Image 1 (cartoon, rainbow, N blue to C red):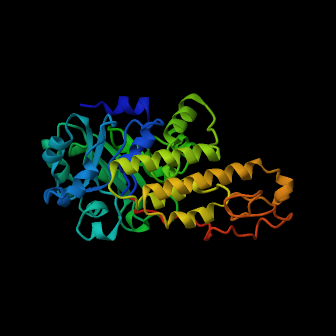
Image 2 (image 1 turned 90 degrees about the vertical axis):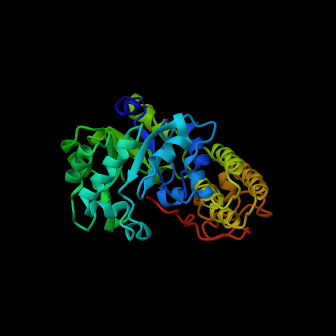
Image 3 (image 1 turned 135 degrees about the horizontal axis):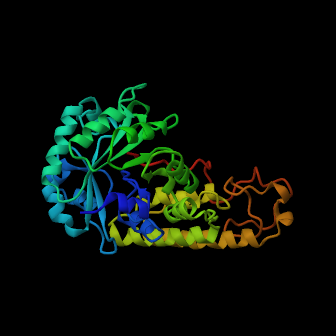
Length: 377
């Protein structure tokens, strides 16, 4: 059985489970760049019970993956998961944090925080069947203003939980406001098992700050992975070795997006998810809004890759042009700036000084507000 404390000492930054995000392709992208422990998307036990092939795809690791952490919600099917995943299964996490209405109306996810004895009985049942550690993910409380996390975590430890992850918002907050990191310290003071901090970790610096400034043994990185699979290696190097976090140049990000698209194409029969994560990688590149306008119209792997060839050509042209010949001090990456030189957008001449902020590329540009975020758990 895995020693969680030793694992967290070696690499304390964990790829958090996120519905619609942490599929095999994204897990592999992050593993290749420093993530050692990675979680599945939140998996419905009801779907497993009905032997849904689509649900089982969420659970099964790819050959390249050395291990997998499976997060479940609902009544548990531990034996089935252990049999299907085999020796690659590192732990089973019980989701008691998801605030989504479709989950809590069934008495699952964060609704379990209103029923600590029921939650404890579920943990106990899972622990009896499991050959791997059983962990739980909770929130600060359920209703606005509640702070029941420490007491609830202590009850989960008594029931056999091997670690507790805590998000510093209540369920009613969803993802608004700020996560209260003091909740992490309160939970750590009440339990002896490792505590994983969660909430508002958007960068490697944020991850290092949570690890260093709270009593967390490890840190869940969720939204911080959007377009940034390097964050796990960067956070570890910064937090443990003092290595500054490097900037990722445009061409490096384009290459990573190509790699990610290729992985998605190899592991899933559809490319719809690429529309979201492609926008994350493109954010901040020259003419990012216009390129994201093209992303939403791509339907196949070939269309995505062809578009990336155009993006790379435009970035090279943009970076090669003298700034003063294009827009002077008015160049703004990712804000719909006009091309600095002839490019795939069809600009026939450099823009006049000061014209960059208002010009719109001829590529179906849209507001540079980023893609819609998938459901977060």
